[in-house]
Length: 148
Image 1 (cartoon, rainbow, N blue to C red):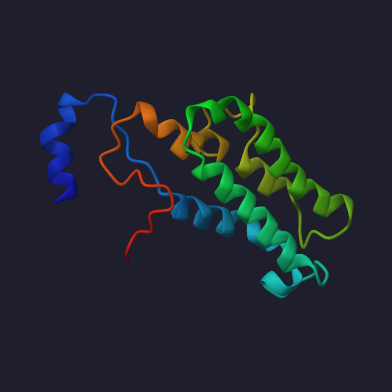
Image 2: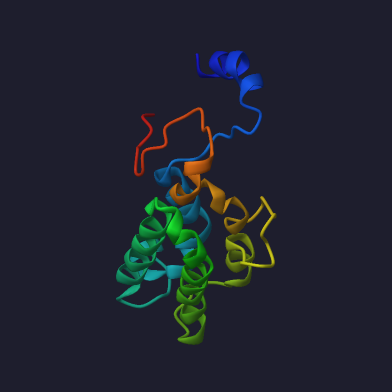
């Protein structure tokens, strides 16, 4: 049904896009990032506080992705760098359970990966603060969880 709706009304909304909900963004981050937090999270190195570090990280991502006001858009690069810093701090403190280079490449960097859809930063326009200017053809509720 969803695809049928897109076929019928899509031509009238040339700039539409389908956005991932925040839950799906978090699932992508868990898939690509969680393993470097180690120990209690993945059963690897990382120390006894690794689960706390991961929870702090994923909460930061959720709060950033769910902020829906357009005034928060200029703050996004600084918040992104803060989340990147949480990853690099693992390596600085010898707590990463693997190489962080691939993780940082996938995560992306403001200014460098602005249009790189292969990075999470390149997909940042799926965050709620950008939905005000888009016809999404899907749920735009922050935190809406898809049924499987």
